[in-house]
Image (cartoon, rainbow, N blue to C red; front, side, top):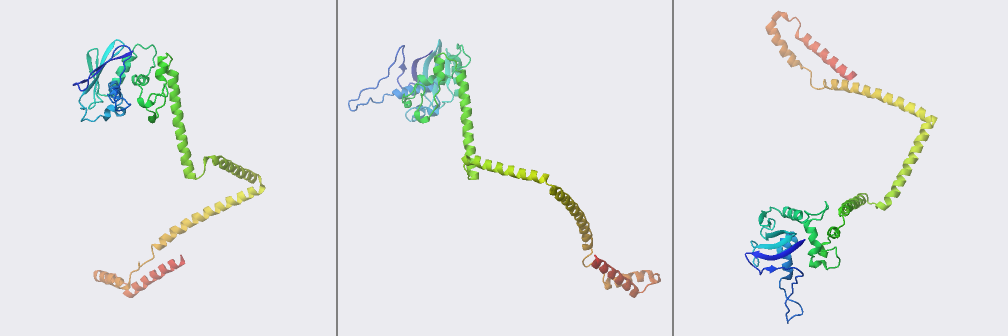
Amino acid sequence: MLRINKLYSMPESFEPVSFYSGINLILGEKDDTSNKTNGVGKTLLIEFINFCLLKEFKSSRVSKIPHSDFSKDILICLDFNIGDINIISQRSIGKHNEPTLIINGKTIEFSGVDDALSHLSNLTFKNSKVFLHPSFRTMLGPLIRDERSEFKSIVECFDTKLHIPADYTPHLYLLGIDISPYKEAKILQREIDDLSTTKNKIKKDIEFLTGSKISSAKAEVNDLKSKVEHIKKAMDALDSDSSYEMIKDEVAELESSLEELRNKRTILKLELSRINSLVGDVYINDEEVIEVYNKFKVGLGDAIKKELDDVISFKKKIDHFQHTLLNTR
C-alpha cells in the first residue's frame, strides 16, 4: 500500500502540504468576480507529487515552470510510505535525471530515473506472490489520472491527445488476476501490428514501382501462369515431333561448323598480326648499304670480294621477295 504523508520543498518555496488518513480534499477559493474558482495551485500540487514519484520530466508540467518563478535548484520533496517502509523522494528541475531516495533514513542517490523506478518497483512488489507484476509507474496510472484524460474510461488514464493504448495490467493485478497471459497477448498484438505496417509499406512500394494495384496483381499472375503453361505444352509437343530430331541434328552440325570456323578465324588473325608487324618502313635504303659497305671495305680490305653493285642487287632481291610474300598473304 502506498500512502502520501507530506509534500514540501528545500529550501522552502511553497507552504508544505500534509496529508492525513482518509480523504484529503484540495479546494479552490471562491472569487466574487467570477463563477470559477481561482488558481491556488491544485493542478501544480498534483504535478509536484507526480514529479517526486518519478514521472517523465518532459511530459510533466513542472518542466514548463519558468526558472524566474521557481529556481531549478530547489528540491521538491515527497514523504510517503510503501507498506511499512518510509521513503522521502527528492528531485530538482535542474537535476531531474538524478533523483535521491531516503529509505528508512538511508540516502541513495541515483544517476538515472530508470534505476530509481526499478528500486521503487522492487520495494512495492517485494511481498507479491506472483512473479510477474506491473511497473511502479504503471500502477500509478489509475491512481493519479491526467486531468486531460477527460475521465471517459476507467482504463484510459492519460491525455486523450496522446492516443496512448489502454493498459489493463494494473487493474488485473489489483483484482488478483494473473497478468502473464495479458502480457503475452500484448506482445503478439504488437508483432501483428508491426507485420501489418510492413505489409502495407510493401504494398505501397509495389504499387508505386509497378503502377498497378495489388488487387489486379492476382489476375496478372493467373494470365502469366496461363502463358507459361501454353509455352510448356508447345515445347512438349515439339519434343515429341519427328521433325524436331532432324532439326536438332542440323543444329548440332551447324554448331560444329561454327566451331571450326571460329578456330580457323583465330589462326588467320594470328597470321595477320604477324604480317602486320612487317608492314611499314622496314627496308634499308641504298645509302645505308653503301655506308656500311665502305666501313667494312676500309677495315677488311681485300677480304671483301663482292662489288658494291652485287650487294645492292642482292638487297633488292630480298626486298622483292618480302613484297611478294606480303602480296601473297
